[in-house]
Image 1 (cartoon, rainbow, N blue to C red):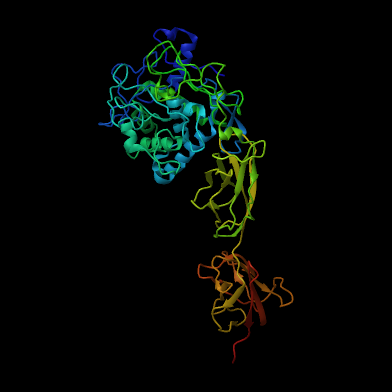
Image 2: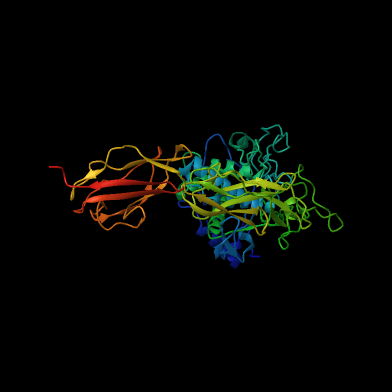
Length: 572
């Protein structure tokens, strides 16, 4: 694992290690912010515009402690392929580039929601990942259940003014369990007074829980996007980050992780993420986060590490989650191992009687994709998140308009994807089912979108279609398509001037159409009926050949109509 660097101590700049850390900080320094040779904000330097919001004091976190570990100096090496479950470029060789599956899913879902509700914000999910890394080590390495809620609360130290900000209790302990002072709460470390108005329901369970990574990630996204910010503008992104935690060192650390994640990440099983070990309130780095899961064996349950005893009675860093409401660490070796999470027990996915996935363009699929999560013993596993992803050249979506949907398995271990809705593109595409938080083979389902059909074509007029040699037909051919008696709109059609009723090959004489360049053509393709099922063909012309000619119109679904055209000299 690459080396980590904590907050630099005074005088450490003379060492090679400190120099490398300062270089990393300087590389991602916000424009317009001045630092000294230790990466601290220099005297007289001002925070970026918009960093202060008036009545909110220390922003989202109350300026609580955060992890100061920097990413490896060597960037992740993206492979040519992408993760089969998330589509994210895979990074090779760096454990720090791994993000637990459920946590990564929460960041991407928040980005998608903000893309729809606040498109001008341009929030990248990698920014949420960077903040989640420095605030909680990606929810303690992904120790979350199927709904995204942490197995134990992540709480910061008491904000009692003793080395931290002074924030008296604002929530009667409802969020942080402390009736005297506030504490930062959850994977994104919101203080209760901020969560009260900024909280969101990101997983659709009807609750706004700061200890739920879906709720917290969405809330953080909205918090960063306030004041009509455009995060694609660096100065506005800097202001948003400083507003979250008003510290130049914090800004530097977040920007370092943002740049690192943008160069490539990969999904790792829940509970196996790499944890930071250095906090902004403990320069020595001797206060590692509790509940650090093992990373060497993805399927093995994690075991909490022993708490630090270097500062008795001092709360641990806010992002580590170490206050009294949290469960005590497990005793060494002699204790019973932590039981595996439901996600860790999943061995494979099985089909759960998914029907044939076919639909006509613009219609709904009759069948839904359904899978069952099973253990090695082929027993159903409940409370597991299954991600369904639409893959391929298609405009089909799930009923909510998204191309990705995440569903939690029920008591029978079954997860059913939302209904599929076909778009206008016809052909085959794939729906892939994978387990969130595990690197397992998924299940692929082929879905087919067929063209809209019509079974009957009729002319909308009974006027005879006649023309003199070398002239043009006064009336244009117009037909109406129906299917089982109902209007057949947006149905594909072709029109061809044929040789005879028995020979439907294209005629080489007689009436013709003109293309955009005025050239003679006798076959029209890519025709489509309108919403009322009506198709009006372009104007017809006649060459010098007299006689009776035939126009054949065909649609998908088997409808066909032959129209008679007469070319004759005008009566004297």
